[in-house]
Amino acid sequence: MWETNPNPNPNPNPNPNPNPEIDPNPNPLGADLCGIVPYLHQAGWWEATAAVHRQMEEHALVVDSMLRSSETKHVFEYMRTLLGFYGEKPELQNSFSTVLMSHLESLVKVDSGMTADFVLDYYWKERLTFMNCLKNAPGIQYAYLSALIKQKETLERKGEQVLGETHAQYLTLLCEYAPKDVPKYLVENPNDYPLDLALSLVQEHGLLEAEAYVQERRGNVEAALEFHLKALDTRLNALLDLSEHGDGQALSIALEEKRETATVELERVKSHVMKQSEVQELLPDIQEVKDVVSAMENALGLCTRKEREEPEHYSNLWFSVLDKVAQYVNEVLNVD
Image (tube, rainbow, N blue to C red):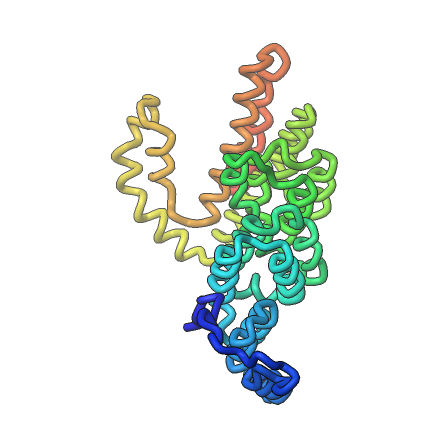
């Protein structure tokens, strides 16, 4: 493991040559070390290069060599030790900043969380510059911003916040790299992104549940329900396709496993004494079924919220959901 002591020479020569003209090189070892660095570079011996630079107290070059070596994971510990030892000297921070930006992709690949933590601790004012350093590597930028967004609550407790530009870029990448996580992000961060941007992105990527949420926030209740129903239709068709063309045997087995329990509990369901969570436990443990339940809950949730807010305007929303389910049941039963 790399040594992190930032001062490798705590006891310099107590008797330096009093006449430098006689000895023009009072530190011949340093000169020799400096001379071998190009050969170490050429050979790709970065661990040895880092050791040489550390001996010469060239800390930014130590970090650069560590980042080029197989010991990248130790670089955060080394830099934190140095900055703590030297009291976060501005010149040292600036030299590290340049090195970090040139190797940021590699650092994020090693540990996106540690990279984000280090930037937040020492380079918070430069956070947009660090983010933009990764603009040509969107997948890596997404990993970095994901780690950064997770620190939102910690930053808020410190009186800081994640910038709007960061949220906007993260949402853009989230739609591409983790579209299923977009609705959750939109709900949990309602004030951190422009609605127009969110609407444009979810429409571009065809994210129905996310668009339903954005439309509801914009006051377009009917449009929101329409997208919830489109999502429900997609999930129902996927379930129907599974039963007809997919792994129908797995679905049949899952249904059979739940049949006995469901029969026993049927009276509780009819008498409305069973909780919703208990009813869901009676359903087959199949992802397509879970997706249908989720889409149904989203649509019914909208109906419930709006009927509670304005019953005179939205009491009939339920019928749209009922029609969609009835259409599916008829298709399953082959009823014309």
